Length: 237
Image 1: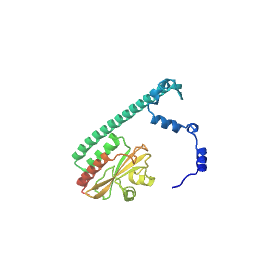
Image 2: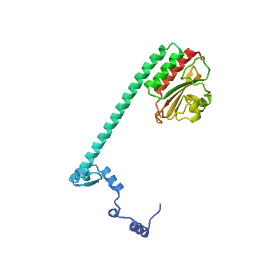
Image 3: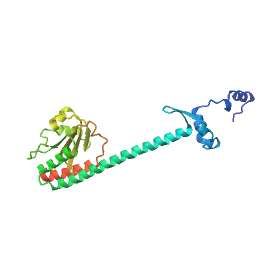
Image 4: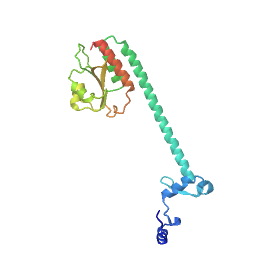
């Protein structure tokens, strides 16, 4: 055990800063108010006498500032609720559209009718730019939505590690799939049935931000499984 001599004690005592001389900082004031929530109850007059600087209204009281913050918080919550309701309404519309599409697809009697149905749903009902289907195996069907170019390299490059690709394509890839340049964004959807890769769907939008990697794929997952199954039945791939 170390014993402090009187001389050392006097030196330490001289170097200690008295509490009254501690610098008053924002952190100290904030810590004190948090530790003493009854401060304003004991000093009620401060609630109305304190004046705070406001960039829009000049000088306001603490009570007015609290009311302003509460009004802003309420306004922000109302905006958030409105946005959520808008998203919910949009999702409900999409769900109904997909539900109707599934019934129409199941009733298709041929591959051409099936492709007509999917093409109309994507370009007319969803207001997207173009729809293409590339199949890994040649088929004896002619349709405007079938891509006749060799797109195996595109699939290996974009869909080797995922069933979806969202975003932009190189011009060479755009030409192979759509036979034209796409000014916006695209989604590529790999078609798999019974662990066999059939090809992929390609859908483009003029909006460069429409197809985003953060998009939810729940509806697309159901859609691609049904289309793959029906194509397998109609084309015997």
